[in-house]
Length: 547
Image 1 (cartoon, helix red, strand yellow):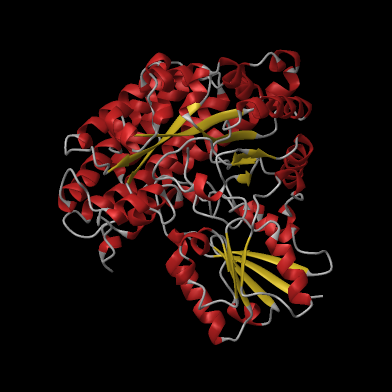
Image 2 (cartoon, helix red, strand yellow):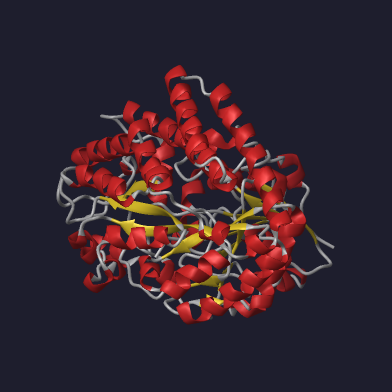
């Protein structure tokens, strides 16, 4: 029996990490990277496996040094820490294996630091390697020849995670995306034909999270609706599971904007318990969308961007979005258009980043051929490797600062939030289902739990914010939502979470503003390089990007 430890390096503070509000939410990290329990499940049962996520616990190098094998996985945004860990393990003469997004798109940076490297999906090659390692005949590099058959994946070993320290759980239903966005590496790594797990696999994972006491789960698919025909029966099965468990799990996910063109799909997502959906809108400028081949966002017959966002909201799904600045078509005025668009669309959570060319993507190859990749050592301090076309790097940096500051001022943020939740009387679809009228006891139990959670979080917000002016603003917002939506406790708790999230956004924004005229701070650089991506891939493979 071998002693195998799987390590996930810590992430730098960033927009998506929510680090500045985790303490008041009583957690250490937003969610676990979903590859960790899956990798553990793929290890033969006769070996001992441990998961160490540096985002919720410190690394004990003495313990790692006693392991027979240490497997390290990570994204490019974890790169500096990943390198530090591999260097320390090499000094200690530990047998190391590395895989994941960074190993896939930047293998040359890691292959000399580890004994074995994995490129791409590894659901087949990882257990193959372990058998060969046992026999003393393993290779130095593994690259899976075929895409993974999702129906063959085992149930992730969630019991190895320290779930109590995460705000959310994470699970994956599908891989792949049918679209051709120029900046996106998903189609390069996962292909354009979405592949899904079977319903029995998905329901088993829901059962596992339910038993673990996790109540919010992020479905980490890059585009949950990439195969609409296949996902609809899956959503019906999830809805049946939710009804059988009194809608115990709150779900949210990522999807493409063409969700707004399918009434049945929006309805099914609500019935399955989805409350929020992250959409890659990228830009309110159609010319920029066409430039980057995000043609699914430019469909005249489907309506304007704002009309489609509102259509999704009208079906009881809260829309988050990713926005990118720095397209070739972008001019300086783009930075003023973006905040106005967000206000009109009533999107509170807009993760704004600089265009970045990921190796392996069509964008990277195009800019490389045009000589427009900035490979200088200091270029990443600016936040992107792209040399902009429509403005100078200094103008792009100043524009990012200006649009972020304008979008995340307390006034702008709460105006967007209140346009949706107070003026728009937004209601989550799941809370309006006929199920609750038939199960009044379950409804009352849910209401009581949410009233208590709202009161606890509201008290923490008012007491733990150091800035008296901001604390007063939060108090006023919470009192306003309590007065106007008093009898909707599920919504009250959601609003309190969004208030806490503003504290995180504002802290990051202040760091960015303070750096104006200099380099972009690490918190924003990490976010920019992920380009609104969430860190939740379900196996060691290329960096993810929403479709």
